[in-house]
Length: 327
Length: 287
Image 1: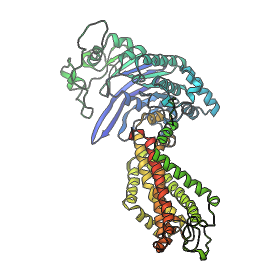
Image 2: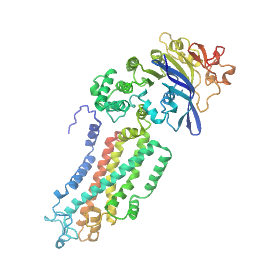
Image 3: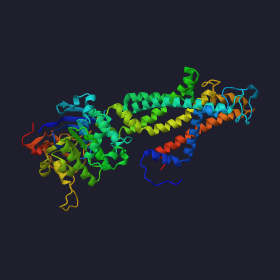
């Protein structure tokens, strides 16, 4: 397997009323071709900022990518011109958003919007683009594709809109699909259908997927590798079986402890004490140490590097410091 | 009129349904429609040529021969009012188009890009807004000189800030919406985002503003012509006709009443229709 996307020490900062918010503070990960990579974490930990940084969609001002590298199929995305980045967006990397209700242009028909994207990136004529759009809608199991082509977004249900979005984003057969909480706004039965569809599409088009979610059930269902983010950094990264069977980082353990289980009777779910730190004044050294019940001497002195505990399993925590480091 | 309870999905149909229920708007719309028809078909409706008078029949009261009477030069008032509608419509369309195009572009660019450029545009608009409308128009005409073309330019320029502000506000709130982010994510460039996403979604306030501005521009243009700064005699223009009639207010009041009523009716028509349109395009304001 070859590496499709490689993010290295990515730093994205936001500047607001004199303060610097370190939304991403040195994020690194690789996505292999044909796999699903999951990014989990609480709200505000930098998951969506990571996605937007990859597409260079961080609004400036107030945000700016201040450091790091993003390599995608041999290209350094951060060094491309605006024009070149636009030709990557939608064609080689596409993104589906959280809110299917609001991510389609309300004043154009579904068909026109899909054809626009197809014509923009594939240089097809109108009638070919029309056929391609219908074909894509049928592929995502849209009932009455011909009719949907002529409908406006407000005439579709949430699940249908998300299907239309997926059809639109996959119409140019991108190498990477970024799905930013694609099912959060949908109800549970529709969620299952959409996840199944994304999986199917992955097989059909051999597309890699960066799946962003805070739903651990979705992660377990969909992903090959998982990275856990906390306060702008990745604290643990492993393949999905390992991270569920043997979580290492105290934060990951805390998250896992907060999953309700149907086979145990508990009055209260485990919670992680404290709150997510203010990213304009993050704690020194390990950002999790004020909330960590295992903290010891180095935790508030030195930033923990990534330690490798077993092949492919990395943890940013001094508890595993004796074992050999990743560097 | 019984309303069928059928499921209408089209947005246009929904707006039309709401508009139909608003009697004032329908009344205003009817006046506007009549005004436009009369202006276009003026030669069909007017019994006499507008600029040919019979000096033996000066200041006649309404009669069977001259339905609305005659003016100080013996010209038929009905014919002049009908031809005046043409001039008025022409001024309205040209001035409001100037303001709409320039104002919308400035507002879109300022709102979308923000920053120093936006600041510069909006301060310029503030300067224009700081003058009372008629005073600003008079100053522009003082620079350019009187006449129909310059009148249209002046009325257009002083309407630019209204469009710029409304469009800017709409663009600023729209550009935070997810579908704009989604548009960028599929690789759309700024030009497409401005003209295929932001502009069509800002159409409702632009249409409303256009209708309401039609009324204001007509008032300003008549006011300027009344002051002798706009349309020059002998062209039949309502403001200029009023100005002519001033000396005969006591002896022949109908000469002033006819163009005065025409101005009032058309301005009221546009205002009622514009208000109604706003209510039906933005139901949050009503329900």
